[in-house]
Image (cartoon, rainbow over all chains, first blue to last red; front, side, top):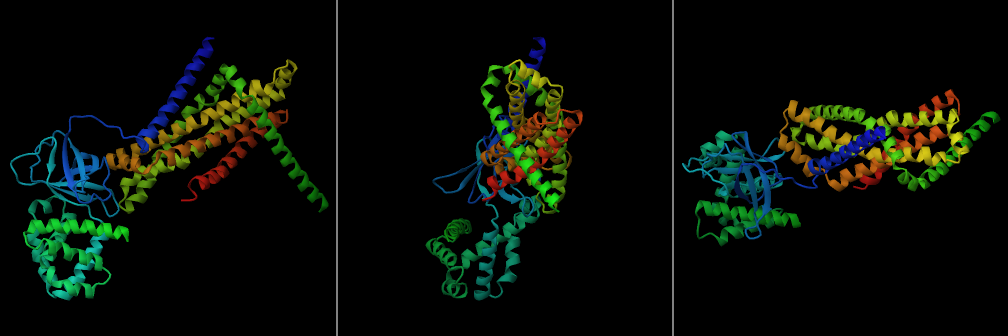
Length: 257
Length: 260
């Protein structure tokens, strides 16, 4: 009798072990459930036009050092952009309020993560604050099509635009961005600079664009439209925003195509 | 010439006859299913000898397999700068393939051979005949509990193997090679689907459990009642189990993932 009790205990342990393994596989390894870990970290929010393939639990890093993780990614029904909630570890509580959030990629095919570039404000973020300066993920197709588009546009309308680009680029660079994560923000700011330039100089090229680049016609038409619509306020910030909207539209279009 | 053809025909008939006997045998074992729960202690004792005693070998091999996967995967993935997907690679290969297959092979070596030898020796020493004399059906008293113990234990052991393997992969990947911990787990969780990967892995291990235990108990029951016959039966049990597991793994994989 004693013997069989020992046996039964062992078998019970075996079954428990098997079930624990299954539970582990279900919870930790697969996507069945996301366990939430409570700790004393604080939350920050950021809005992005496009989060690319950013995932929950992706690292949030500053100067290359991980300071927190993405805890949730939601979609905002009203503004049509993604709201990313980050949990920042409590010891990193001196992040200036003009910090920029970028979605960066680790390696060419690697995972995407959020890189924060510190600003210069004296005030710091508190729990639940929103990072207002954000830069969307780099989607390779968009970057390539934008590059081709710019090239076609620049070639047909303004021959010396490639030479004038570098100076624009320099002007567009904010020092902290360059310092923090060297390779990517440069390309990003270059993008931004080109966008600004393009959106400010776009209207006259209306007919030429259609002529030179029939493949990108829908996108071109769109950019033109948005710039026309908002041509009264040619403030730099506003046009950048419009351009981002256009990109989102463009993406929708290319998805439907 | 004619002789060799005759031998071939004889062999074929013998094989087919054996296959037929094993099917009848498994039917009779399966009809003993209710009895297993009436005499639950028999099942417990068999789960102990088949499952509990295999825990150590399964978890140790799982740990090493996971570590090796992680190490090799890191070398390849780092060429592409994709070390972050190491977790996915380790977990997917463990949960889908290596967990069920390697566990079944180990199980055939550790538990299947023991079952065959035990039953074969019972037959050689006429214990089975003795039971029949006492109007006890040896299939229900001896074979059924062993069969169902194997079928129950295999999925649990395979799950244990996969879990320990993932931990081993984590240990090497994150601990030694410096892959980011969050990326390791988050990519794994994002890419491994509960239904597609984990449930299919469990179905596989269940099928392998049936195959391995079936072969083991049948070879024991069908062994020539001599010491040599028992030895041969044990060898056959392990060899056939391994071949059947690998062949069925291909069939199951083609059915589960083939049409994607």
